[in-house]
Image (tube, rainbow, N blue to C red; front, side, top):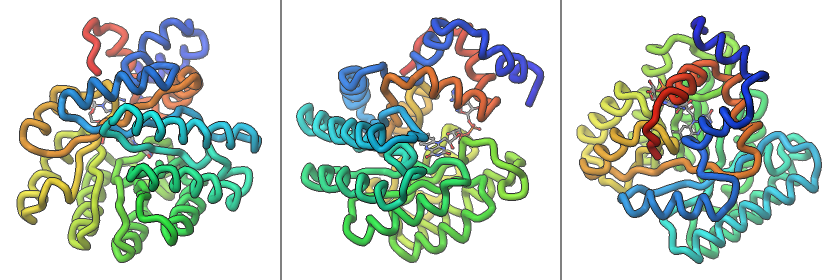
Length: 302
Ligand SMILES: Cc1cc2nc3c(=O)[nH]c(=O)nc-3n(C[C@H](O)[C@H](O)[C@H](O)COP(=O)(O)OP(=O)(O)OC[C@H]3O[C@@H](n4cnc5c(N)ncnc54)[C@H](O)[C@@H]3O)c2cc1C
């Protein structure tokens, strides 16, 4: 962690909420579903697809998990009602993974059947390594009944090559990202180059197996490497999509769209924005550097 990031992280507890709000404003659509709907309408008008995420994770009661599940269903309904080009992303700890795996699976199935009726798709996000096995187990259980579901693999995890080989054999729809949690070196690559190399290795395995792939990154090295693979394999635009976070690198995003690639923006919203922002910053101090930069930027890019 560099000194600047360390400073930002250690001062977070004293940072007034309105300052965090100013920063979060760039990355989060707002507190309400209506905010997400209007953010997605804007994205769609620029030829960009979306995936909406109801902020929240690590719930500890069944009531909270059911409320989150219902919020996901409201999102799917709003997508249909407003004819949005968007799907849904969900974190399993938000709908009960740490309470009871079976209960969580039932909640996912309820969400998936709503999505299926609307001809829509649900992506299961990947959380920290304590959730990896259970997340994959729930994904595989629901995948037996539903085809409108995908999973996420983190390139920083040493286990991911094996996971991707298995998922490729199952014909999974996989989003590949670097991974955002601060994981120990025993299980995760720490070197930027190693993570990039593993990311490219995972993409190649998935594409060779003709899987649908979400290329989630803002890293030019990876965007260029992925574009080269896409060109070499003569992939059609429907075989893959680039994915980015709301508020990040909108110029590069527009360039990819101009080049004819499909691109989806992860669009989080919800009342949990403060806890979410603080937790993300503490977990991954690198983001603190972006935040510091954002505090001094006047231009708002979404
Ligand atoms: C659509 C999507 C879904 C994701 N889902 C998951 C998930 O399920 N599980 C998980 O662990 N992680 C997830 N992530 C996060 C991901 O793992 C990375 O932490 C994040 O994308 C940053 O990695 P990068 O590949 O963009 O490379 P980086 O090297 O981190 O970033 C490259 C450049 O992009 C810019 N940038 C990146 N992030 C930010 C930011 N927050 N603010 C401002 N600028 C930024 C900077 O200019 C940076 O130099 C997701 C990311 C995306 C885009």
